[in-house]
Length: 193
Image 1 (cartoon, rainbow, N blue to C red):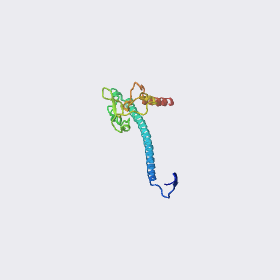
Image 2 (image 1 turned 30 degrees about the horizontal axis):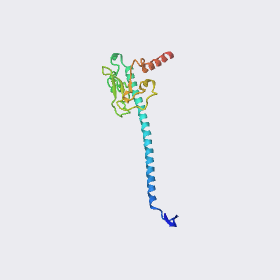
Image 3 (image 1 turned 90 degrees about the vertical axis):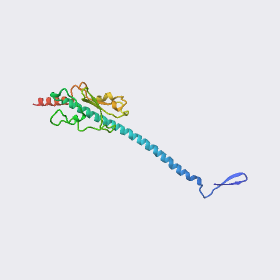
Image 4 (image 1 turned 90 degrees about the horizontal axis):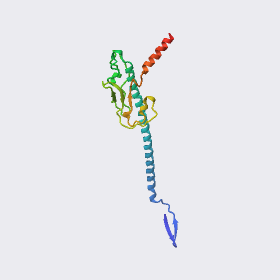
């Protein structure tokens, strides 16, 4: 804009040329849009990370339950001749029971720890070295702090994944699920005959 002064009055006279100072405004506008997109992507990444952590926790509960059930089955299938050794000495014993000449499998594979993505597990051992439980070696605070299934009620309020211990105890499960299922099915067979 150009200003022309007439007798101490200020009047404007317009030019057809655009002022040079306005060109930086577009650049600043683009920078603001990029900053807003960056903040939005950060929020999406944080939500995705939170959801992924919850998924890993669910996987840990499943895998730990598989180990717990396998130890339960190993205990329930203990032959009369080896009642002194009702627990596995290693996790590999759950893959193929060394107490039987034929193949007895209680676990399909040694699962990876979903939290640390490692095959190494913490082992709960009896004084003789036999295994009665497993736990994750991963450090970190669980997101899930409550609303566990009854068998995992002791996990409520735990502050570290290593405190989620998946153990089998015959005193907690006086009649194993395998024995109760076989007894129920055999009683039905007797009733039918």
